Length: 478
Image 1 (cartoon, rainbow, N blue to C red):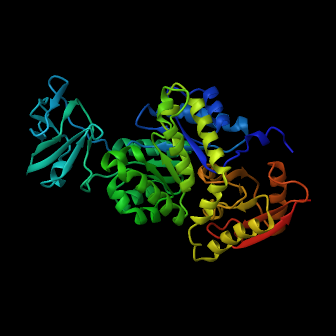
Image 2 (spheres, rainbow, N blue to C red):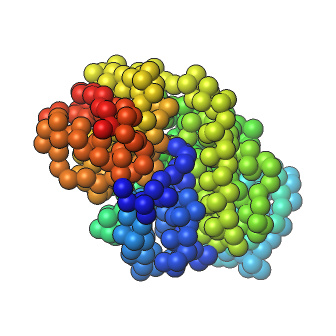
Image 3 (cartoon, rainbow, N blue to C red):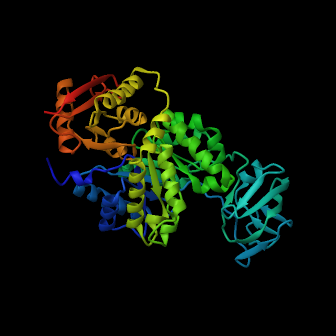
């Protein structure tokens, strides 16, 4: 048994995603974050150059080789950014009740008008449409629409400065989710061999289909649920995507704050039923950007995501630009582990388990959990070339850990985001007896089982055929 491997086994099921940025982009920092608990690293393509991100990817892969564990990389592309133009004085103050014009004229604006360089918004808006400016701090309502401008009434006023963002929660905008910059970033990230693509500004299933076609199986598409239109199309989007993120920042701008917790629960529940990994993100430990400890409310927020059954929880600015990146990951690790040690968490997890998938593969995954529970199995070992068997078993949220065995390095890295999975790369398997032998040896080497323990083994036969899960064995560790 290799003693160096055992400390790198996570003592929790829910995974942690950490965003890299100026505060965390050295090999030493990345290794510290991984050892503190980060399972997946997020690269935010809204900031930095492709060269910056290539450097970070190389560092992550070097850390991966050093620690001997698969690490997932999420390339989060920017998506369309809708913004107003510039003001003659740099900023203005809009009074509640006044009229304000948004037009296509690039002349710097004043307190009466400003450029809106997005004719699609002017075309899609109706009388009564709400426009939110500067992350929702200002609210406008359309009172007249002309071919080249919108006349609005200021419903909630305040200061407005150059290039502030515009959100249009009421209408589906005829804007593709991928911009030219996104396409270039996506091509670059796929060539670099990343595991997941974070897709912003998704409104319709068609947006997902386009990204899936470009990725062509080279990476999982992770739809960021950040627009009300995406929530309305949730089931159709889940049917197409590989995984999903509850992006509460933008969602919280376009939806009333009281709706966001309910939408979060709805997305997590639907993703679990569909067997899609789901990440809860944004402001989870926000105060740790500048403080060494979180607020009680933030600790409770992370705990809620774990109780809801999320596969992973995410840190953004806390690790990318904060003063306490390692402490933030360590704190999240501690909160998750503590929640999962509570009997109430297991009761809730069992109570919220979705109905078994009505297929032979779904039945085998359900049986694997039940058998492991009945015999007190130490681990469920899954063999999968694509990760589909492992995903099915993780959907069942078993009592014991899942040992995700695969001959594909890429699949092992993708498993880094899946609940309860300890990914491991093994050589190709050719027979059932070889599979059982390999599973027993891996369970011992990774510290999951010892002499006299029983483990459950599941896979698809014939081996190497994607999408099949049709065999189940119980093995005794000798």
